[in-house]
Structures are given as C-alpha cells and as structure tokens.
Image (spheres, rainbow, N blue to C red):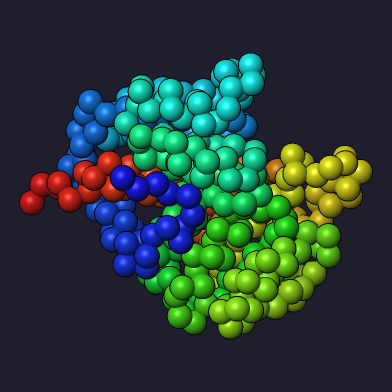
Length: 309
C-alpha cells in the first residue's frame, strides 16, 4: 500500500508513467469509465476547497466509483475534538482510498501512519500540495511538450504558497530548469526552499520584485494569489494583496509561446482581460487536474496496469 504525501514520493520514472496514464485517459476516457466500479473515495477536507475536492470527486466518478466525505472541519467530528488519527481509522472502514486536506502541516502524514487505505495529501497548510503539482506537470508537458530546459517565473505569495513549494521540489529533478522568483520582500520563498532545495542542488534562480523586467525571459509564468487565510493580521494582507496584477499591458512584454498557469482561485492577480489570451491556460489546467487525479487513484489502488489492450 502506498500513499502520496509529496511529489517526491514518486520517482521521475514513476511520475512519467503516471503522466503517460493521464494522457491516455484524456484520449480514451471510455476505456477507464468502469475501472473503479465498487470502489469508494473519501474526501476529508478540514478547510474549504472548490477545485481540489470537486476534482477528486469528478475523477472518481469518471472512473465509475463513488464518493463520500466532508467539506469542512465544522461538518465532521473534528468539531467535537476527534483526532485525525481516529478519523482515518474510521474512514478506513468506509472507503478504499482517501484524499485529505488539512490546515496543519503534516496532518495527512499522521493519517497515513494509521490508515488501512491509501491516503493522498490534498494540501497541508503552507507545506505541500502534490496533486496540484501533478496537475501543473501534466499541463506543462502536454502544452510545452517537455518538462526540461525551462525558465519558470513564480509570482506572488512564494512564502506561504504550498503549490509553489511542491512545484519547485518536483521540477528540480529535470535538467535545464531555472527559476525566477517574483515577490515582495515579505513573501519571498522560505529559507528552507532556498537553502535545502535550490542551493543544495545547484539550481539557478533569481529573486526580483518587478514582474515586467523578467517577462521576456520566461517560458512559463506561474501566478499565485496572496492568501488571506495565511496572514496573521488583516493590515498586512490588504497592503500586499494587489501587489501584482497581470494585465494586457504586462502581457505585451511576454514571449508569444509563454504559458500562464495559476492554481486558482484567482482574486485580482490576473485581470479577466487576460483570459482570452491563448497563452492563458489556467482553465485548461483545471481539466488536466481531473485526468491526473484519475491516474493517481488508479495507481494507488493498484489498477493502473489493468487497461484493456
């Protein structure tokens, strides 16, 4: 039995195999429509989510399986003080696989040590968001044709952004990757990412404040929102929330083949006028998220090798 806590839980070879499976699901959805008949996915979400929770549910339903779970901690026995360990022991009696989101870093890891079913980390605090990373990798590989030799700009909340931290960890394993980090001083990448991940692996990177000055150099621009829920006071959030707004004027600096990704939800950081730009692929990214979660569910349930010939 395997769990997924981090994108690094998959080797590059396993990751490529997973992305290949997701690509086949995209091309041949009918082949997979009954792969999870009789299987149940539990979605245990201790903090709000739209895309991730519904994407998991959609993925399982497209595989022929069923879904149960809760959407907030208030609607579960966590409101009565039940521990994550006890909850996952109980869920293991009801479901075949579990996707868990929790505001506390490491909570899904704790759950995995007590579970009798595979557990997928669907986001833990500001730490990891591995299935968003898988979504990002599938989007990049499908639309760029590769995951190597790319210059990637990461813009916005790089301090608390778990999607950013997971993506950096995953991409450094591919050759020719370099990063440009675009953020205000207060939201720069954490020291442990800079020192233990980038510097330790000799990955080239640059930290800047102005987005316009680096736009012409980017193969990909990964925008993120400034997350109100990660701030300790409203004053800091209000001061920083509109620090970056990507609009048509800024897009004029970008290359014709640059792609714009965003984990969503979007607030103000990408103007709606950019949505019609063919380089804006953040809604396509959502669709790729369903395919990659279908592939992950099949893989963790041991059903990935049972495709019809």
